[in-house]
Image (cartoon, rainbow, N blue to C red; front, side):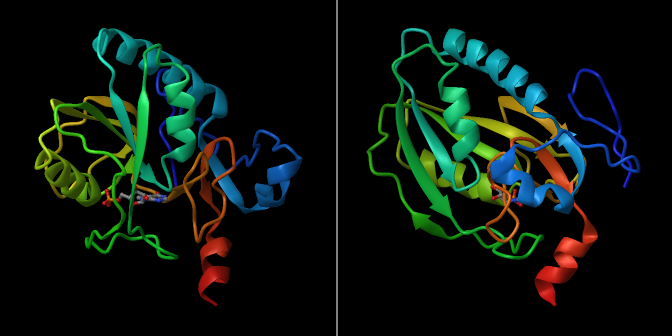
Length: 211
Ligand code: IMP
């Protein structure tokens, strides 16, 4: 797999070199499963700080509610929220994800709904990654019926060229190639969420998971 390297995107290259940033002790166990780092921890934090500033300006004078899509968005949402200089509220939805597979089924199921009413509120939906876009499209339709004052999306990543529905993502931090990624909240079979960067897995990891 080749990944295009561009200084502005924060995507790191070197698929063959396998020189990875060292992981601290708690995630060291995952180090040999990672094939390549796509988004370094530093690049993620830089973009989050910029986005937080933009959100602080865009929502000035308002008290927005951040709606995180569990579980993948929890790390991103926690870091992002600490760069938004406004009185925020938080809520979460959980939807069915890939489970132990790496391809979307296209079927979205709500596992946990919001705890709060959002009628008349400024809602910012916080997503980890947009792949086919089916999850986000479903969530937006669902949330719109609850009559928020505004509804926008902040997504850490969007995979390019794979959207099956048109989507308007106002705050998008990174575009990445259409590969399965883990880390920074994203999992494969519930593992790797606490890896501090976003990376791809070595093929053996998938093979071992199905065998
Ligand atoms: P979509 O409905 O195809 O856009 O998929 C969105 C959801 O699938 C995300 O919120 C993630 O939970 C999960 N997902 C999509 N791509 C990946 C990936 O590369 N790694 C881990 N989870 C992913």
